[in-house]
Length: 461
Image 1: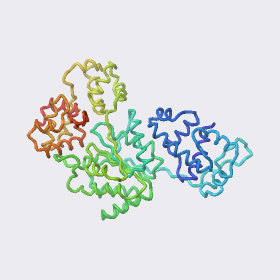
Image 2: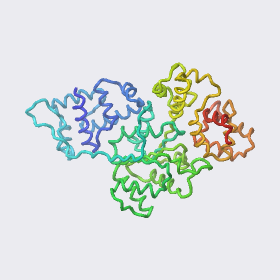
Image 3: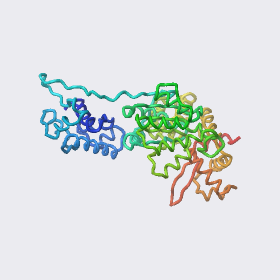
Image 4: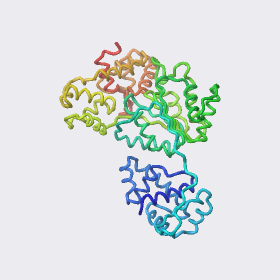
């Protein structure tokens, strides 16, 4: 079977039934089915979970069944579409062609007979999305975040989640993941907009920027309530993907994690509206600190999802390979030491290449672990944001060789229970403290790289 021909036929049927074009994963399932692949094979080859691929396939077969008036499954799909090509129309198929106004001018069945009238193109085709990425960084390398990509794509295209938080410690690759996501789902939207909040614009400025893109006009209302109302109206009428990066820049330094600066309190109210008010768009927030309103939304039944980005894992070997490092048998050890953090590994790999001629084994002989000066500066900037009680806690945790329960931390520190609970919670929301459940108890430990920095630099001095 000609794959492109079948895709065109299937897309015309789906478009006639739903008014939507085939999504990327739907096309992938169709191609795999034509090629005789199983769901597990399709999932593995394309970086999705098997259950997600099965769900997409099930919905697709249901849509085609409804459009054709006969049962379509993965096992009979090829046979049905072969019969369609041979013009063996059932009455139900003809009914779809005749009764659907969108479908009426689309000939979905091509023929090799040159005497037949060539198929007409759809009169209504979705327009190309308006993509405005502003100051988004250019992505030169992407390292196997296929599972995370599939999760975000599922949040947005399948669950139609209105508000999504992409969280994780600085340098872990959140922005890279979000930019790569755009390529996979851009056909789902009329507008795709990326903006960084690193220079702390207030909500009025951010909304003005969005409305100028939506309206193409510089005449924007001054009243913030009107700006919010108009923005929500566009999100209803036009499917939009808006990515707001560096949300942590709006938070106070020297306060517990996620507390907004004075004058920025409208942002959490706006984010909550995005989750509460019905619309057809998605707002993706990227932050290295977990906002407090996000923690609250997680407890409620709003269309909200979050993804915490963790270690790159064994895929980080591609980073070390790009630096042409030696001693591949030692690479996994290096990756584990630096927590699979792409930024930390890139910095360290540069150091190994420059001072150790790329020999990882020689670098690993040094104890304690070496932290490059630029990595130390990076960590210093993060730790400057901590409260005094958080600083006291990480000083203590840095010298512990095993994770501690809250009661153990309390016994070893002159700190109130309230300060301990709030401090540990805040460090967790900054992704500096790691939580582990063992033997029906919860234990906490400091990120090992952060712990090494604290001990090496005699922090906080």
